[in-house]
Length: 241
Image (cartoon, rainbow, N blue to C red; front, side, top):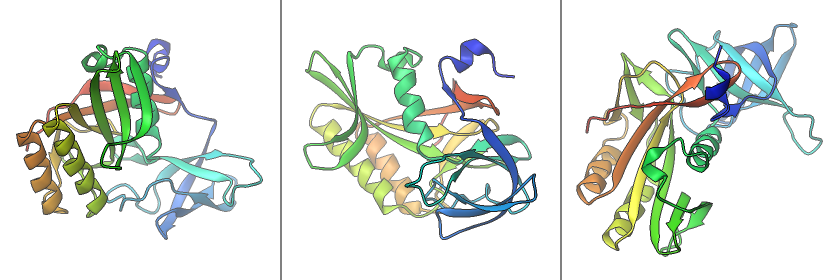
């Protein structure tokens, strides 16, 4: 059970419904067999390949949303892998990191006064978070959801990502203009000891990440406490480039 003090600094799941994954398809859809025997189609809020965490037959956990405007009432939130629960919802990292900054959990960002989410840069790109101090000092943060892990190593990306490379270039350009830029990887699982770029999947992304770091972009990697109650930041994870 997650301690209340930890959960208070993180996010609480909505009521979860257990089922078994039948299949994921068309990227944003998943068929799930509920414990009641009913087969439902859930929204899969993850545009990646979900390599290594979408195996049919695995226990999964869904949230239910009775919104008449929604096509699918269920949302896939978690999957139980052999060594950890894994959070698959890519909306969670932005929410969790924003809350962790606002509540002072992340010491690296305590200096700043204000936080703004989903910000357009001077080059009209969009990054996840802008932090400011007295409207003068600025820090842009781009957040990536990491679910792929093997033998204690977490990898990003899990599929070729031209959009991810553009974010790296934008952060590098911002840093060259005098602002602070951070690439933040959130590992939504508890079984990784180190983070590496997934050169075996997208070598161009790995090259661009190393280039960005060489030009002053910071890398920050955290994993999480995760259970059926909620999710919270756990610890800083070392990275190897």
